[in-house]
Amino acid sequence: MRHGAAEPPRQLYRIGELSRLSGVSPRTIDYYTGLGLLSAAKRSDGNYRLYNDETLDRIKRIEQLKAQKYSLEEIKEMFTALNRVSPSEQVNRKIADLSTHLSLLEREVKELEPVLEQLKPGQAKRLFKTITPQTAAVIEALLLLLNKGNFM
Image 1 (cartoon, helix red, strand yellow):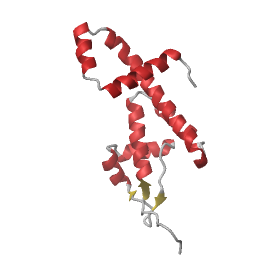
Image 2: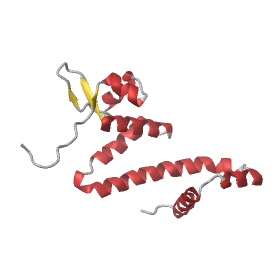
Image 3: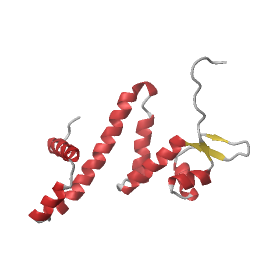
């Protein structure tokens, strides 16, 4: 018997449950599994694939990246790059995550730029009044980073 705190039992889901929780069809989950984007945590006694919370998070991440116009191949490459990071290099993994998020934000800022330029002064003023100070600071920091180009 091991001493210390026991790990909480992990929740495992069959494909139908995972589909319901993630909002994607079982067929899509099968497709993602076939592409190597997902993998079952284990098999049940009845040989059903069982998925864990990490898989649920991964599906949500895939859907976010797809919504931001990344192809499934690009998403697979991102996941492969992240999986190469060993557990002892969590800082590197976080930096890779932040880099991915920054790329996504940069893409979104570039998409918004032509729209913002077409706003009339009164519209722009009303828009910027709705932005919280924290959001404004993040936008300002992103604009500084984007204007500097490569910062890493």
